[in-house]
Image (tube, rainbow, N blue to C red; front, side, top):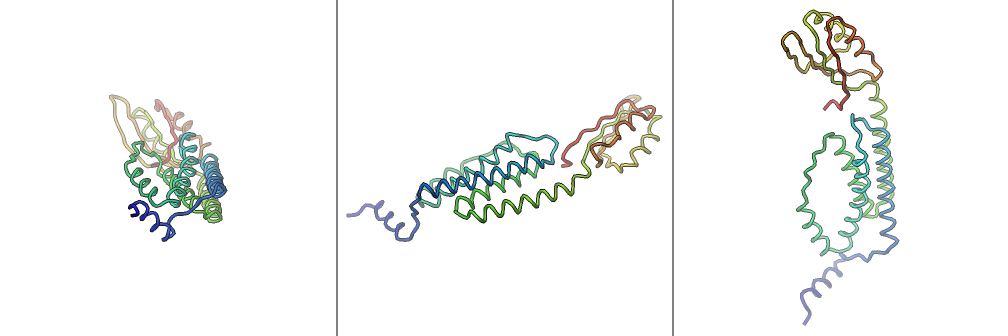
Length: 219
């Protein structure tokens, strides 16, 4: 009498759910994922738009791409093992918050490339990676004229009129105002070029105690 395991194995083989992998197939799939992952890494590193670049996150994108391809290869080769893989991945929880929403897009990009590479769709993975890279670079180059900065200005009452004239030139988005005894504090967002002399103009206003400008992503 055949065991349940042997019956299940024969049924799966008859359905064509078991694929005999070759070393060449595995190496080519992982190589394709690694190449696409490196392209994503270079695009992220060279055309990064945020305020603080993280090399660890950039490396994580490459690792995610290759690991996803490895998982897809494993799942596609054995139905029983794929069920165990799904169960194992279902208990994984990520507690590190992604600060920039654009980083999530890069992670999904790496995962998508890993899936297509692991499935053996090499031309699709390479073409899609190239197309998305060009699209992202175009958006980055076209939007590089102005950056978002947060400015914090401390000033005395007598400087308010002249201060408002200087700020009116850059059309600020006021975030808040505060008063401390004889001093005032203004917080606002402005979109200007990196080489702007706005801070110098603000500090030159009589009655301004200090003016600080910090670049951030605008989120």
